[in-house]
Image (spheres, rainbow, N blue to C red):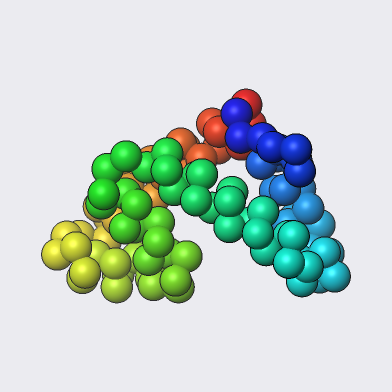
Amino acid sequence: MLSSSSGSVTSWVRLLKAGDPAAAQTPAFAARAAEVCERLLSLLTKPELRAVALWKMEGYTNRETAGKLSCLTRTVERKRHVIRSLWNQEITR
């Protein structure tokens, strides 16, 4: 499970969903969010999964990502499903 003295991933996900703009603008929040993102990315041991996740975070569409990987859009959708499953397992632990 992801945790530190400043809280678990689950608590950070709840805070993000709450949409507290003031909390999201603090340096501590930004630092913790970066830690959580890096931890979640570290769960993606296959380079292609990590690339798909990063491109999604950067705003690329599934079609654009498929073009970058020279694969079908459906392949990207399956990879994103795998990513979500891995991350959900970590978040709900």
